Image (cartoon, rainbow over all chains, first blue to last red; front, top):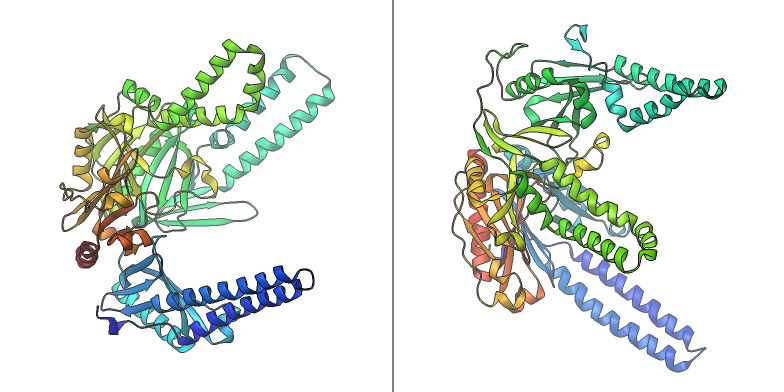
Length: 154
Length: 431
């Protein structure tokens, strides 16, 4: 499992997450601005806190983005994720029950989708967010094909 | 008696009464005073009318329900207005239970329950058949599910008497429940009531009404365990392990070894001194469906409610002949991450099976056959990273048994993940 083999979500996912953080931080700063009308100190404190929290969140979002990765091996799919709690899942294609591709409104606006592979075990955790539409469709078709070829009973 | 023609058959005519269960008893209770002490004719007329409607509804539901065994599936048709046709492929059936609630036993009836796999797991119920009919039918369905070509209506030869593997002495069951967690809670409640009754009798009524729900819940748990596990006997059967037992409601089921997702042994701290343990199996699929109600949500099936380690080994030999016996302990620094359960932690493997052990107050040992592994996961939390530890989870389709290689050295966890992936693939191909 050399590091070079890992495929990653689209960089657009990072941009999307950053945009979310920036929007929230701006909201906090604006709120601080409004607060200055009542009490200057409280308003400034609120704005500074929003900026600091925004910076922290940005760092978290960046590290989280870089933690995502997946590899299609011969018999199984590897998915890794998580910064604080890092997880590496090995899901054999033969165990796959179904795949779903979802895209929320924000994801869709930048042309991204999430691919998720389900097995008979509820704990299986094979989710890959932020794939470009074409890559999501390719992965879905490829996994379905491999799953059918290697299917095993419960 | 209940043949309809073309292979279709009906359920036993008394089944609506048993299905109504407590409602039927209530109806009788309501009717008796009306019949004995003549009240005003109008009242009794209304009551009779209501009862007549209920009886008619039960009769119609019996009339429109029919079932048939085809070559490889069981078909059930039911419903008057909304016609429902169910088809259960017998090769997909995980287990067949015979359940006999108290009322059914009075009338000599039994219910047949087909458990199928899959996460949406539906359950086929034939409620109720006559008790004599149920046993041969179960054997026949299981034989058809195994792929027997054609099995006649009557079994060719009587079932060979099966050897009893383990059973539970009633005294030991009572003792084990008394010192289990639910039992201790119930005893505490009783003790509290007694103490209040002696010290402040006036407060007793308040306490009893206020805590009624709690008292009831504690006793319900204890009673349910006792009722279900009373004289639970496991014996060898051609299809696997045969379980039978129960006090008021009798249940009988057969577990095929190939359907077992995982096995676990639980040893609460108070039992350890006595050398007792409890053995449970986890089967695939959700065990609850609309008609089944609460009690069917039981997490795992107890094979051995309480027994010695020798009993447990006998059963494990049938289910998982090739299982690891040795456990390797985690590195010493795992003590900082899991101070309480450090002593319990360990894992071992053979080429087909993984064994893990954990638990804080009670020791839980889990065996997971690798051919049933759905996926593998390596998880590392912040504290584990600092201590260079990692855990490996083995995910199965079962619901309550989790095999986790907890707090292993990072390098060992990586190696285990690689090895188990390869072994699981091999086991899957071989099965």
